[in-house]
Length: 172
Image (cartoon, rainbow, N blue to C red; front, side):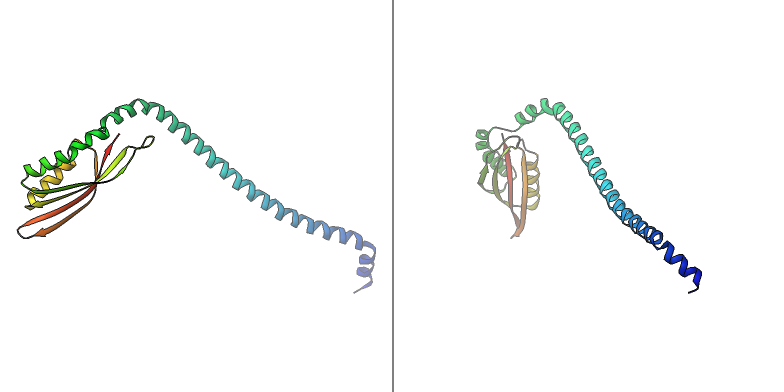
């Protein structure tokens, strides 16, 4: 090194050290600011999501108030549990109208709670011609009771068919 540079370094080493420390501090602060910025962005997104959720909740509560008068109407559509005693008789009458052999059993009962209706599982076994079995199933679906047919198992037996129908009938 020549004399000029040696002189420059020996007299200004404190300034050069200070500048180096400042540069390092600027890089450290920049990385810290970047991490803080990403945290702020994440909090902003979370806040926006919660705000949207609150708006949706407010809208749903408003719609719930509008729908409240219809709950009693819907509740009255479902028959009381006592009326389900005639359910098996009506199903049997449909089977006889379609000239089908008939078997019926009630299964497990679930009592309604709050806004959920009660339900009773049932199983129907009918045997006869395919068209009669098909008409019977359509008749059961279109009956006056609210039912959910869970499973239909149709098997060919000799000249006719046998259908096992599992479902749920709902009550209030």
